[in-house]
Image (tube, rainbow, N blue to C red; front, side, top):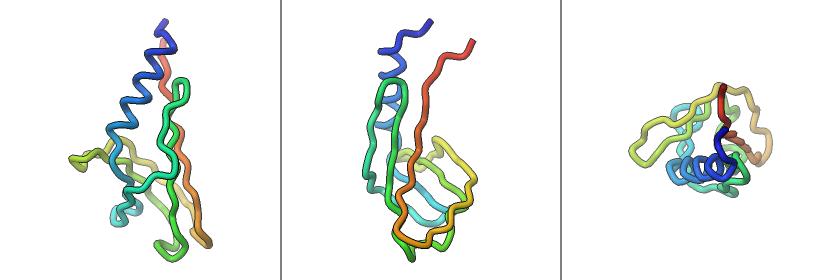
Length: 94
């Protein structure tokens, strides 16, 4: 069994590697409202202002070298300022 403290360290490390978010392969956001590790999870929150895009269809988390850490297809209409939230959970797999 992996110790909970080590899972927390991995979540923290992952947070240090994420430099920015790319929406729909074109819009780059580098400001996070929340970027913190809690227990074995990394929590990210960021603002997508109304008018920036009409809909978010793809979200990529990238490192400072512009390498993709995570990608997700979504369908989120942006009709007002919207706070997006990602929770990345670090778990041991048996």
